Length: 500
Image (cartoon, rainbow, N blue to C red; front, side, top):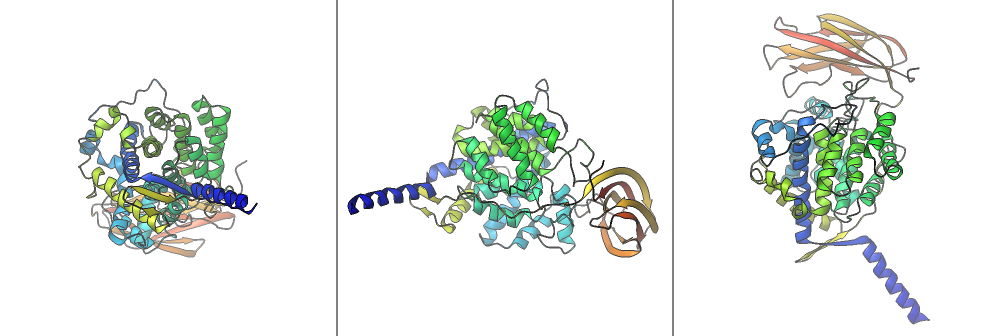
């Protein structure tokens, strides 16, 4: 009896070890990392011509998205800014290379804020916050960043999953450090989800499993979880009709709350809806490279980023060698060319991500021998719950087109407001100083660089969590000059109740 018990105990130990230990050859690990970066570059290029050209609508099958073997080179030569969701990733990879795995959050924030590339939405709002002295996570928090739920973290933490193979919780930890630079709540969850997709694609070739397991890193009470979880349910209900799933998603989840450009507009850069498009591509693409990329792109909105993410995850799952040659041939002329604003090319990042992955494997208790990489697999667990814009409901969006003079007023009724606007001056180094009061109480003295500069403030002014009622914003322009202009263009107003 003791012998039988020992045998059963030994078998149980083996099964337990196999359940929590995953093994890849070094060659396979390299091939998968290379496949992730290569596919992301291809997908970004494929979706480039239709980025934000189809908002709130599917890109019809009758609209051709053209491709040829020189397509990536054309973008490198003519519009290198298309690859913002790659070169921002590379900023963070470079910090890890320079400072190691324990690099502090502020080192990433400073590298990001002082990088030479242009930024938009949550990224640019975070850059402005950093340059004004805020530190993460305050830089991405919705009270400081009206774009907190935007897509930014989702498109630039691929590297976290690629350097944490089979370790989704470690990838989440990395995105906590990076994603909170520019996002909060659903915006941060976009990065957590995508990093988990990449991480799990190393250890499973079952796409439904990868999507469902990656979603376990997101708190169930979040609208991000609920949106993507709905996609997985609709996929089961309509397994052969991605357009029906897109339509159901659009009906339920396409109303923007945060980003002032998307409120009451077909434009939607919210992370949860764009991550839903990624999930639609992954689930309905059936591991076909073209279908995965094409479906995610044809869901519309941020078509280049969503196609890049979806096919990047697939590229990690199947590896570089299994990417069809038709798509890879466009890479050959640029794999040794640095991405704009960086000193890193694709061949560099293939190597850097592989080296970083080996370091993370060892850090997390795995082992590396001459041929094999033994990964200590992690069961996905949910990160902390966060919610942006809680209790805030957009009720009105109005054009105001008001020139701010030395003393100007804007009135509104609600609990919060975001004012869009811009600063112009013949001197690009000019910084307007704008004192702002609400109901005669000082709120801030905003430093407003010229809007064409990399240091500009995305939105002219915002304030949330006010008492419900009528409010008067007073602007005092402290350093006016005749060749400068401050213009308020639009107001998004929030109430404490949804519109009836």
